Image (spheres, rainbow, N blue to C red):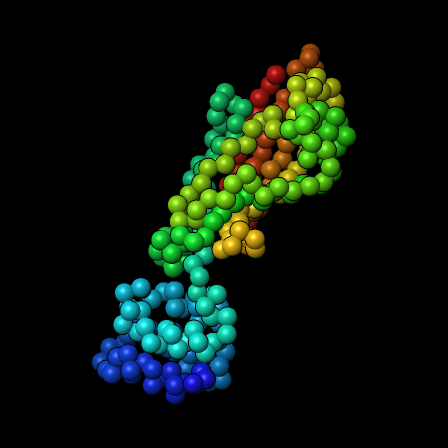
Length: 248
C-alpha cells in the first residue's frame, strides 16, 4: 500500500491498538512530521526523527518501520548510522617535538555506537604544488607524491564503532635531511585534510566538523640553524589548533 496518512495510522494501530489514547508515544514527533498537510518532510528528515527512537521501541513498532521503509524511497539508506560530533580530544607534541599527535572522537547519530559496526573511517588529504624551495628538500622515494599536486586516502580504514582515532604527523614528513640546509625565508606548504566514513570502502563522505588545514613551514634562522614548523587547524573551529616547532 502506498504511503498515505491513513495507511500510516492503520499500521500504527496494528502495532499498538491504543496508540496515543492517553499519552504521547516515543514516535510522536515522527508521526507529527508525517501527518503534515501539505507534506513538507523528506526521507532525510524522517530518518533523523526515526533515529531518535530507541531500538527497543522499534521492536514494538516493527510493522510501522517496515511500512515506512517500503513506501518512502531512499529512507533505508538514510537510516544507516553515521558518525557525527567530531571532537578533538587532544593535540600534542611528542617524541621531542618531532610528532604532532592528534587524538579525536565522534559519536553515532543513532546514539548507539554499535550501529556503526559496518562503517569504516579514514583520513583524506589533498595538496597543490609546493614551492620549489621545498620540493627541492623532499626525500625520494618516500616523499615523491609531494613533488606535484596530489592526494592520499590514508594508510588504513578503521572501524567507526571504535568512536575514536589517533593521527600522527611527523615534523620531517616527506623531507630528507636536505631540509636542514634550507637557506631561504619562511616558506610554507599547505594541505587540506578531512576525516571520512564509508559503508562500502568505495564511496566516502566527510564526517561533519572534521576538516583541517595542515601547514608545513621551513625557515632559515641564520648561523646554520633551520626551523621546522607544523600547524594543524580545524577549518570550522579555528580555536582547535596546535603547532609543533623545532629548531635544528
